[in-house]
Amino acid sequence: MISIINLILIKLLILLPKSFVKVFANRYVAGETHEEALHIVKKINRKGFSVTLDILGEHTTDKSMASNIASEYLELYDKINNQNLECNISVKPSHIGLDISEEEFLNNIDKISKKADSLNNFLRIDMEDSRATDITINAYKKLRSKTDKVGTVFQAYLFRTFEDIKKIKDLGLNIRLCKGIYKEDSKISLQNRKQINKNYLKILKYSFENDIYVGIATHDSDLISKVYNLINDMNIKNDRFEFQTLYGVPMSYWLNEHLRHNYKVRIYVPFGPEWYDYSIRRLQENPNIASYVLKNIFKK
Ligand code: FDA
Image 1 (cartoon, rainbow, N blue to C red):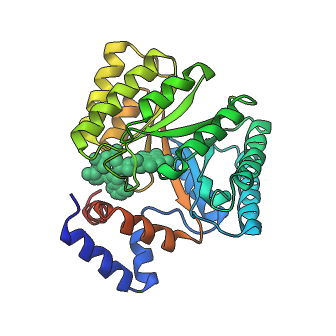
Image 2: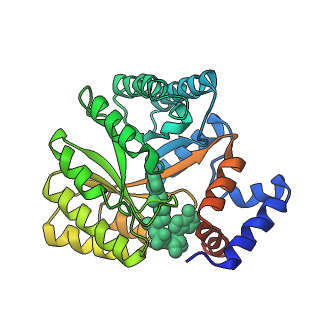
């Protein structure tokens, strides 16, 4: 439930000077430039974790801007390759043109996917709100027919997700499974945490049964414990999944556990000059995050 305190926190945050907010954002955002972000990637790699890099931003309305962002992703792949980093890339459809037209998005994502493929790297297409679900899945299907170095994201809170995965399971899938971060209507999505977690586990079990590679993206301790049980019960090999967390969220207990079990971990690292607008929009849309952030400032 969205509390009044969370809403007040967001109002306060917007009133603060940007430089002040940056002090807090630094924990979650890996700087503004490629160099700053790649420096963080190196540090994370040294600790034994993989990374997925994301340039912050969404809802681009200008064609040349969308195309420039796509070009930036191509440059990033080259830099990752030249520096031999264990790092792939995550892209938001609306950042590279979905709000302009489906064609614009498809052109740009195709370029990025070709680059990932040519360098033997990997592209993850992030999942945005439910207006983008069909287009994103269709783009994934199209790209998947050309390369296996591409994956997308499915959200456990949407009623449709189980069937969506079932429909395309034979393509040989690589998915990230998350709960879903956007505010969605109760007509199309689960609203209750217990039910979302139940659906998450149902989808994960189905994915394991059907040899779908899964990026298990959650910070929820109860859920992660249940995922561990499922992995044990089903005797799932550790090359069939990876755990994923957002950069900055304090997960040291689980990160150590994953390493101890020889489970792969990937950290989602966002960066870029758009960090402020992006973070404020996300907070306004999902005020519950405000209390996470505040809680985490005091945690290791
Ligand atoms: P839950 O919301 O129950 O949170 C559990 C605990 O984790 C909280 O109590 C808090 O301590 C901590 N926490 C969670 N989120 C936090 C945050 N942002 N900052 C600080 N602490 C936080 N969604 C989507 O719709 N499309 C996508 O493509 C992606 N991609 C993605 C990648 C990765 C690697 C992750 C980890 C998550 C996503 N998400 C996403 C977001 C996801 O859908 C979900 O909203 C958040 O992960 C929060 O849900 P949890 O599963 O962590 O559980």
